[in-house]
Length: 451
Image 1: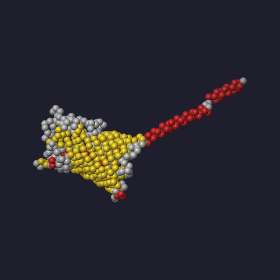
Image 2: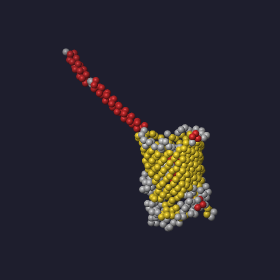
Image 3: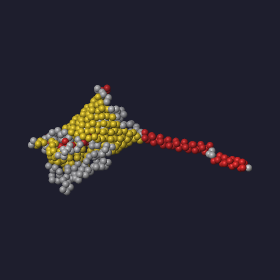
Image 4: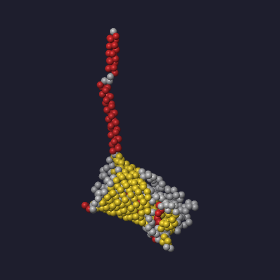
């Protein structure tokens, strides 16, 4: 009897467990759901990977040692190590013909957003492109990358006219497929990188992303490539700048320091210049290139109006001229030698002999304006030797010989003499004499790594 009861209980339990097992159909449904979930995850990951594949990351680091041959730095360090540039460039190809670029500079104590722009290319003729954002101004040496330049820093005239190199605005480029011509027209805020102080010394143009006035500046550049057969090639062209600054005062001095013109607050004070350029590339003895540019025109600085007991500072419009000439020679596959002649005259109406002699006799309401060392021309001879460890690492030895235009003399004494402080704190009276060549030479060793 007991055996019979146990047999019945086991049979019932077995039947009950069998009834709870999923059917084949249910098992197939469960497996199918798992496969679909896995496919969805794979599709999501693939879409994310496709987006990441559209992002290109590049950049470079420039570490350097410099020694400055100038007595004015004796109270500080005349030689030190530094990071000149630490840049990472992100390029995102959003779609065919549409590109976004973002490039910050992480140099210590000098973090700044260098580039942030969008480019839309013409999909039909593939000749036009529209840029918008913050980008390089249309000029050869400005657009020539800091990671490729043969002399470590840009020429003085370019650094003066285009501080920071970049500007905020929009640009239209034309590169026809059948003709080796390149045309650029840009509309820019215009005051990027320029300091405009009021009587209190506050910079009215401190915000980099807000225009200082309602006017916009226009830049244009055109270049043409002329093939020279087996010898090489010649690029030549020109660029122009047509802009203005908003006057904050009622008087404008001319650059000869003998006359002035009345102004009004809000008036456009013009700054316009033209430049011509060439780049010759020759397949001679392993590679030789010669390139240069000449720029001249009118520049301007803005003053402020008289306020109470504070004397006014007039606007100033100066005629200038500047040029540079490179000669670059490859020495085998890993070495390169470069030379550059760099000349900049900030005021062509004043010669060295005129400095402190010519001046504008202002009324009692205005600060007297006299010619000074800021009107002196500067000539720089730069020589650099590059050694490429590989395609991404370059070591450079650069020496700049800087020579100032000499000033005249009054009663046998130089028109400009300045004090400087020695390392021990002692002040040397009239130790800097602009009647001579002031020591300003700079020696640099730079290591650059690209990725």
